[in-house]
Image 1 (tube, rainbow, N blue to C red):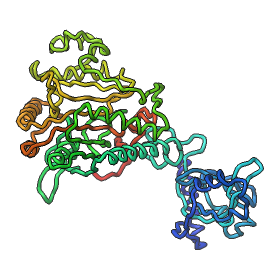
Image 2 (cartoon, helix red, strand yellow; image 1 turned 90 degrees about the horizontal axis):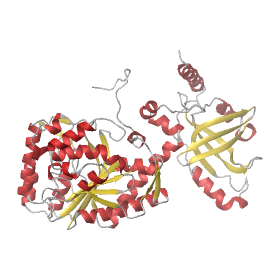
Image 3 (spheres, one colour; image 1 turned 90 degrees about the vertical axis):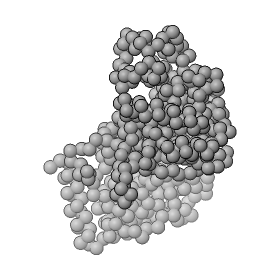
Image 4 (cartoon, rainbow, N blue to C red; image 1 turned 135 degrees about the vertical axis):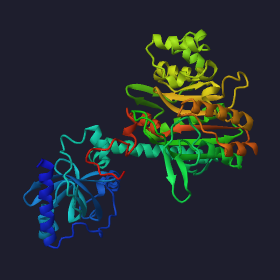
Length: 506
């Protein structure tokens, strides 16, 4: 039997002893009136006027994180959602019965305390308990104090323990929540309407990705978990909602990496009578504002790099970036075979799926792959890359200056793709031709190509005003704002392979 099992067995015996004494181990009648933060704020504002008798009305509860016993007295540290506080327990103050119960408690148990504040000889403000009560008995022990919980696999699988033991992890998710609040507030103030669109769709659309498939028994039909809400949001623009957004959960049946999780959070927003240039301006303002309000500065540090969101963000055409940053001779960018030879000379693998179609159809895929490897990691400061080929932008409006390119941008920060936006394609005939090409790609083996969506074409035939739309990856943005190297650090419950002992229903 291992050490943890020994402790669990000991605690269960203790539980049985307490039950025989008619002690309720899981009561639900303790009313909390203050948090640790409330008490700290009062002390900071009125420290000189606080006396033990004047401040005796604090009622707090939390998880015990440390216990130091000294016969008939003890110091403990307990934590609630707002912070940690020291408390002093004296037998002659809380009474024999309460102190007996306290002696049976363990680190990890939840307790309720009533009392006032005083300063110890070391100058630390401490809660002097007048009453103490068990609120919830913990059967399993917390990880050892000095070793903590550091193994990433265990931290992700048992996020509840990670949150208990690691205050920096709790702060990451507090910041993530604030990022979402800031974005929502920013858009609402600018007259955007927040909406919800289906998470199960008969036709997956809005991105090039492999969907998850399910089956609806009552309707007798296959459905797909959405890979993006885009086509539904644009239906709403057609319906007259000229400025809409959705903070959505989307799902893509792809690999797991430091930047990818099959279930993720995304912001998508659409604005009628706007162009992709307008959205670049808006995005810059929105993310700069979020950084200042969440982190306190427009300059943030990510993995050792100082990222300046306060200055004007760079804008660079894709082909220019391939030449100036990727080191590719511009004479190669319109020749499929020369690009393949270049990739081979650099040891860059290009899958058969990318290369199996003729030159005119696949050149954009090759350029995109080379960009991902040679350019993207070098885009540390905020950079908009613009002018993507039509082939890899099936929902984007063609450029008036060059019909082989689209009015599209992607935003990169710290070598991560953060956002993708474009002026919307609202010509139904052009959109249908693009979908047909995607259908051909899918039949040729590209599992991520778009499906044909006849209803969306029909909706466009009713007329969609000129508009621009954008998607922003909330998880990756949270990574940047919290200096987290992996997407798993900013998702509370990231997906992982099942353990051998996992009894999850399949």
